[in-house]
Length: 448
Image (tube, rainbow, N blue to C red; front, side):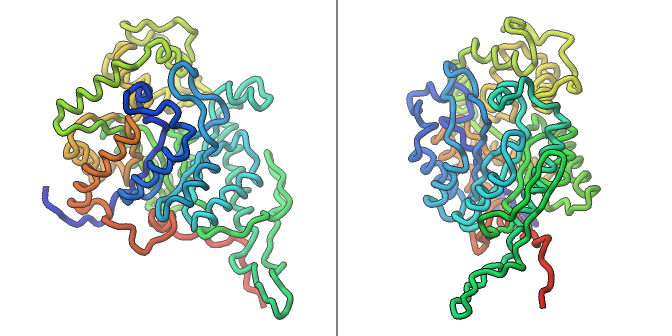
């Protein structure tokens, strides 16, 4: 394909996960089993993504021990702490942390994100999650996770309170008048004095308003509640879609919901996840994918799949299809959209449990593509230009080699086609990179 200009350009986010998104990546000779707690490893990944002029990088998180420790590297550094360190090792790339609205309080979390935004010069983003699962609930004194709808109701109030806190300082509240002996203007400090269903927050935040005003707000749920929440609040949406048609339907639905909520649809960027497995030929890429699948420990994978599907241990048989009579999405209180995606994938392609595990091993339901750089670039361009995506959440199967390969071999193709930037340019903040306005302060009033 020849170089050409497009009216819009891709947004690329690097989703970093220890040794890679494939569950068996840690078993490869190149992988460091301790990478998940190695700052140097994360600095290297951040700098690779920045070399590729990615908009942002993203760290997942949850307030519980993920996976069986026998399965893969488990546990992770707290993301806001880690991203603060990465802010000092990078200059341009956005820094998005996952944080739960179910198991945090607005005041402390709003302060931490405002602090990251200031330290990074306006590069902070918050991936807002409601946190599914009994395991997390029991770490916070609850016997069961709250109902799905209740988690989203709490999340909505959490975001509203956080916005009040980020706006509790006007941008020019600091006067710094040494001669008059006045450091700040008390009239420009606005305590939220919030009293709601889930939260009571009285005082102003104890850190000034950040360079972006509010951090970039990201969301990843694709259930009905999740899409309604995204239409109201999200500025970028991470989603898992297996086919172009499904991605197009999700994209159109979310943009329509955003407009119905009174917001500009262009102010929410849809970024499906893609797990690229690259090779100089398609056969080489397929072989790399096969090697990874051979390293899957099926016992662990079956246990995880049974948990997702809310089945009793020992229910699934490796060489049989999923059993009939699985719960409907409405009966699931956990990760509804991921549950539906996995069941539909298995039914649509008539996969055995073993085959389904192989498909999920690379990206837990995200679209996995083994091929040449040109094939991966072709797929990205197709989804981008045919109404399925504003960009992509890049999820290398193996790290750091997979991210290196994407930056060195796929990004140049996207640039040559006019689909992606060649340099960061004058836009400094994460919001500016995503083409989003800086929020006005809701409390600002003309003062005489």
